[in-house]
Length: 442
Image (cartoon, rainbow, N blue to C red; front, side, top):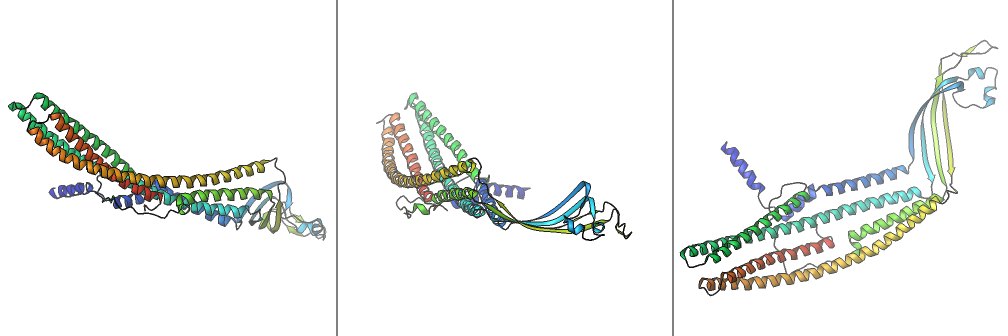
């Protein structure tokens, strides 16, 4: 029983171990449900392309039928001269009211104004489009994981700092309570210290609640796997990697370009409706059935076929079909114009996407500089307030300042430290955002 308890404790402890950012990203890539769906969409587009490709080779069908007629029919169509070519010719030809047939048919489109060719190009572009979507989905997932991870890391640091601040406020309250009982401090000072401690504890609870929310969001992104704690990462405030500014090679831009190309191919596919269609159709099969009557020649008194005898005849044909829609009351024209507008719309979206990417890159680099300035400012402010608090503690113990002054300086120091933590990880978030914009996150 003790061994089982030890194992359980070890497993519980392992679940509470911090998970590195790399481990979290790997879990997300393997288990994220949205990413899995993107992979399935990619597979579907590949299968669709294969389906379109093979359809260009035509199709072979196995055909079968059964027909019951009111009058007996020959098993295959026969010209009159073949029937009347000899006195016994008609008696040698089987007829039936119940005809069965089975055979193979092969048909292929020989010309359709390049509709099939454009359809295949559309399927190729759609597959490439789905591959890009999957890669972008992975990039976005990694960026979201990194952002949430840094938010959680920041909250963990803030929680630790708040707990330390709460502890110091509790010590201060206990000290003032003791001095109040001895008569050296007023009841008002004790109440103020008590209130400061309660406020700090309340802030601590808020951070815990926000931490649980972020952990739940991370767990959702990693496919419902349990996530408990983030592992600290190093943040380089000085060095920032500069990437090549080549927007047209970015997947986000290529995705729009693919959509434009797909719209253009759809337009060409619609244009093919104005051309004729020529198809080849072949058939090879057998017709058979029970003979309708007993065929006995009155001249020779010879029976050639008995009633109910099953007979069969081979039947084959090959043919070309021509179809050209010369008028449809403007239906094609309307569809064609609709697709022309779609192509124009996609070209405008291309331009707009390029402008937006450029704007986002400029804004991100500007925000990075601002975040760096915020961090340096917070760092300087925290150092100054740390020294001020040290001096204020001495002054308060010597009754040179009021408790309000001491509590205010401590609160300012705590707020400054929170700002320092937040600005540090905010800077790293923007670096990750720049990586995401340049599609370098993976």
